[in-house]
Length: 348
Ligand SMILES: [Zn+2]
Ligand SMILES: [Zn+2]
Image (tube, rainbow, N blue to C red; front, side, top):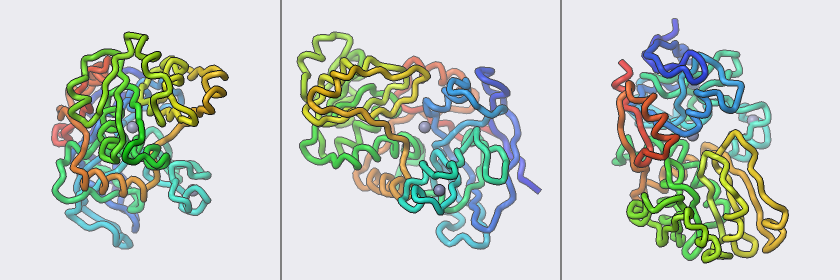
């Protein structure tokens, strides 16, 4: 007997959401059943619900920023208890045996990680994400939410938080590191807060001045509107790290010139179009372009604890389930301040 729960799903690419029911599996010995409180809307949910990357499995229930309460645990689960507040991010299973898994980078599992939705588990069952009342997840893939934090504001950290924390940590960002954050939407605003909490000198590179006051309030020291292209000359060789959080293809070459010698551009966005960068942008000043994709479970827990300790979280708009289609447009237009989070009680 599976458990039927209310959910939002889209029957085919770009069809819009309908209120439906989905089935959650019976608990295996190492499973945790979570009553969802909030589910964040990530830009990649939109890419997938519109099948912009191809290969989407429909009907689709997106959502890979999930926060809720444990309501049942399997007989072998010792790491989580009924009543715990927990989070689930972008994936819900991996082989746990390959080198990537052993290294704590389950997202790069050689057997293929099981994504939280629009994916198939190792049993062949399709996965459905957080836009629903409940989810059942293997215990290893469930993180603890620290006590005393704002649940809605912590929800987006399960994707936006780890996606930005992991490369900042990997590059040893600390007091005095010059970090430029390109784009200040859902990912970008969290990148600003985390980099500032690490002590970095953070600059926001946004198209217009519209978010300047917020950017400075989030901890940035500087804010530049790139619609005035003279900014790129003024900022030549100014940064150690650039974090590109834009979901559409941006002219990387303009930005590359703002990296100092040995600087790294970390690309986090996933546009359909290729990213283009000229050889000279990287040859001169020995610059690099790299990608980064979320982070493993241990690092995700470390990020959650770091954010609680530094009293930071996402800045969110809590919305009801009937507003999701509208907010998809707002996310694409850059009109959300700064992450939309669905109140899961409205899925009923
Ligand atoms: Zn995401
Ligand atoms: Zn693996």
